[in-house]
Structure formats: structure tokens, C-alpha cells
Length: 184
Ligand SMILES: [Zn+2]
Image (cartoon, rainbow, N blue to C red):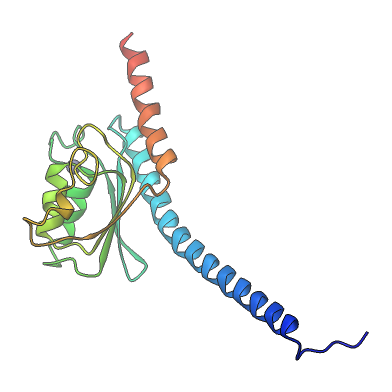
């Protein structure tokens, strides 16, 4: 059978196939970006598990720049006897020793930041925040309120929420479940 590529139907078929390929490449690129966020969130999750081992509320955070790990830490309010020692605060205070403003930095946190940490995020001019689970009780990056998009403030980091949401929520649920068991 002789194929005639000049027929409109063949051209249409080729264009459709090219479009499908482009769509699939674009799709895979989006997947890669997603995988990057998931990769860093996995490291933040490992920090959350470290917190759990020290009987701390399991929240972990990771600071990244140019796709390189800069700092990682976890909630240490009990260990340090400091109610301000949230994972994000420990990281933001540490980086402040060598960097005044955090342009180009991304902070990954397993749990939606509270008002204190969100205030520190605004003041340090962090470029991007990625968080996992929502915190309907004290989260102010979309749950109770969204301080990071409030036009009254002069810095508005990019926000990505819900990355590895289930795993980030599960570590907290597991922690509080064991606490209830140990109380009863
Ligand atoms: Zn906080």
C-alpha cells in the first residue's frame, strides 16, 4: 500500500501525534517538578520522624536553594524548652546568621505554618513556601487565614500546598494517637 503523506488526513494525524508528544513531554516535565517538591518533602518528613523519636510534635522542615539542601530541622519545643522552637523558626534563625533576606530560597514544611512562623517568613522575604498537610486549627497560610497573601503586608511568597499531604498528616495523626493511648 502506497502511503501519501500529502493527504490532509495524514498531515492531521502527524500534527495530532506531535501535539500528543508535546503534551506528554509537558506532562512529564510537570511530573518532574512535582517529583522535586516531593523529594524535598520526603526529607522534611524524615525530620518530622526525628521529632517524633524525641517525643516532639512531628513537624519537619527543609531549606533549599538552587535545588540544593541548605538546612534541615524539626520541631524541638520540648527538647529546647522553648515554645518558639518550631522547625521553620529554627531554620530561619540559623540561616539569618549568614543571609539577611531569603530571595531564591524555598522552605519545605510538613505542616502549614503558624502565625509566628508565617511572620518570620514574611520578614525574611522567603521566595517560596511549600507545605504538606493543612492545619485547620492554627495554620495561617490558607486554613484559618492566609497571612501570606494579605495585601496589607509587603511580601508575598509563592505558596504550594498539599505536597505529600497524606504522609505529612499521617505522621501527626499517628503521634497524637499514641499520645491518647499513653494517657488512657
Ligand atoms: Zn510555627
